[in-house]
Image (tube, rainbow, N blue to C red; front, side, top):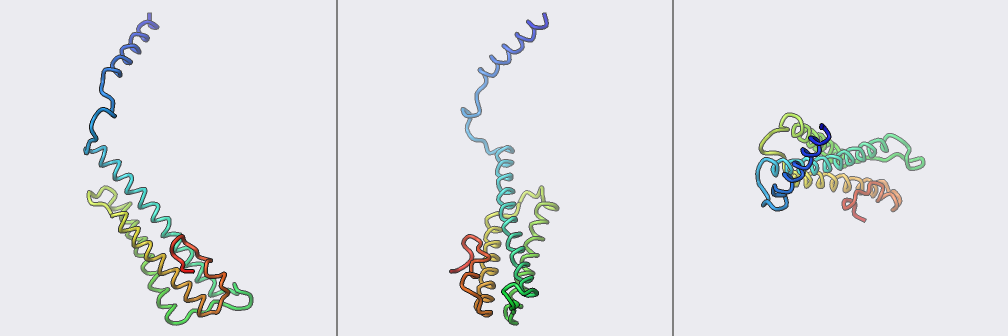
Length: 160
């Protein structure tokens, strides 16, 4: 008896599924679900840009480490006053952008006006370009081999 009742419920469920309109038949909605999908996409883009920002920060830290070690044979990487100033400002800007991202994903996680991932990506790209330019200045100022230009290759950032 229970087998028959179960079979009837399954058959009824199949009929109900076939009689209800499919999601593909309905026009795209701009309701809460569409907004949720859009918000998830924005979060994914922000996370990708944040990972790039962390890579830029790590490579900058590596540049600083090179100044305190004999990375290139018997020479240390020497920073000029101008390079030091640019590096300090780059460090401040990286930390500032990390702080803004952290605020976005914690305090303002449910904010109706989220951080724009495109603008955030542009800021990350500018920091990457500044980091690459600083590295190239250090390469030239320290007369390093041409092959060192691409050590911090970051996609589009270093100039060759």
